[in-house]
Image (cartoon, rainbow, N blue to C red):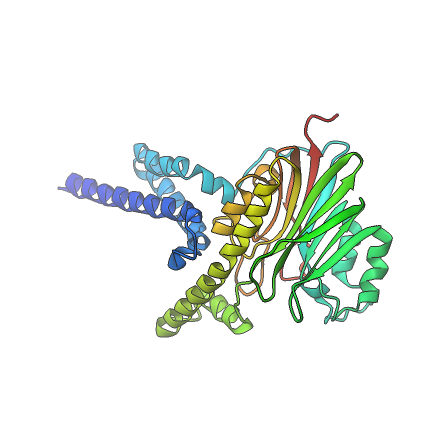
Length: 363
């Protein structure tokens, strides 16, 4: 009798494990679905880590009660290898070789210019000064709060070449700073009221490098929305209130994804048009690693974090939402090293991401 009950219980657990793997797989490969046609699934990737953890719990269970059962969760991870590696890569650390260039992307949140610090210095500017990146791409780089003169006083000493672009009155400002000459600029055209992408040609020795700086459609979540989400995560919001807040959140994120999809398509078309050229792409996608935007943009590029980073690399960290939405990517002629999301600087709602890039086949 007890043997029959145990057998039934293990079969039940196996079924639950298989169901988890099915959902995990569906979510993991949902980045192939265009949000315009599949709005409800547009942000499914945000819950992917939940199913990774549940599957891991099944793995622990099988190790304790029936070791042969570990094949189920392990096969699930193997089947989901691509999305698992995209979301949480692990690589053997390799130091950047001599001659590599440092690239950094940072949503600076208007340099947190409304804050006042006792020493009169602004930590984001000081951090940028310390990092000494060769190519720096900034998003939300408006100087209205901090003052243009204060930013220029730091940046002009670090970089000989720079450019800023705005999406329009009241829209976003993105900026690029480079130790190498910027020889051309082009806006990648797509519909947006407040976001934009710019492509630059940079001359480094005999090489011409295309650098694309992106700030794709924001989530549209208000401070109140993020506060409610944080309350849900902490368990402070329950019942009808939690249900109402979750539906509202899904609706808003879905609307933003629908706007973001044609923007990502436009960037992908630009990249396809320049296939074969040397490209470095940076920016805030406002979307998770398991998303349509990330999938279509990275199709012909190497995701530097996936290739050389470790862990989830959560770059957004406000309002209870923790996800990697900031990216550095490169064409196949570059080898990335030591890509990192740096959580030690917390003055923006984003952490910076940086990476060293070395041209392949060169000593």
